Amino acid sequence: MNPADAVPRGHSPADVDLSVTVGTLRLRNPILAASGTFGYGLEFAHLVNLESLGGFVTKGLSKEPIEGAPSPRMCETPSGMLNAVGLQNVGVRTFVSEKLPVLRKIDTAIVVNVFGYTLEEYVEVIRVLEGEDGPAAYELNISCPNVKKGGMQFGSDPAMAAEVVSAARRAAVKRPLWVKLSPLVTDIGLIAKAVVKAGKQDRRAIGSGDQADHLAVGMGNVQDCKCTNPWARGHRDGFRRA
Image (cartoon, rainbow, N blue to C red; front, side, top):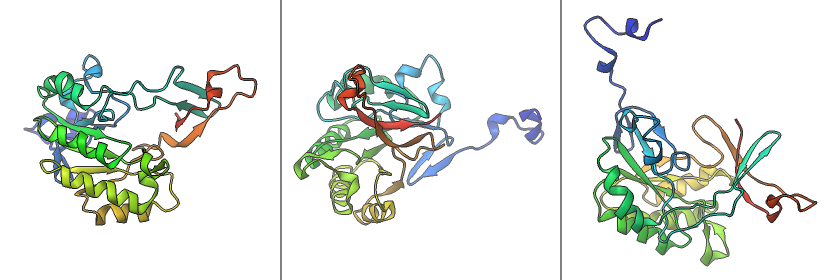
């Protein structure tokens, strides 16, 4: 059937309301490009009309720039692909000075992904962003190791998840706060309840093992016993199945 035939006479496809609400944020349609797959958005402007999207989530931003993992960063396996980018990003201040002025001109919802290795780093990234116009919401990546607690991931423990979300919620005064939960836990329900109780405004449970169409499946690593493959260095990151 021609899509135009499904629209009542006197109307065009453009008249159909596809808007959705995620927490307190309203999107013009449900198409939201996920963090880590879409760069800062600008990289894809020559391939897709960014204003046709409901919005997009930037790649993660940290307090300071991060170079990321050494190459190679991808490894093909018989059942999918392993990637280890290492959270490479320009840092929040460079994002604000170089990326955000261009992003402000795009008429769509821009959700900024935030991460850190201490509570203070999460708060500082949000504090810098709170002083700027442009972002529609924050997405909190709590799958990072807490360096002050032996490297345990914030999102793997209900108490630590609640602590980082509570600190971020106090810092995020101007905008909604989403939380990206990790699937690599024994009971994600406990983590979700702790996060909600900590004062999270919008619940969004998507992590490296539970993307919208289930493309990502947990974590993994590759070891080459003959040490001829650079992956023998022990990269460990997302496993994605096509």
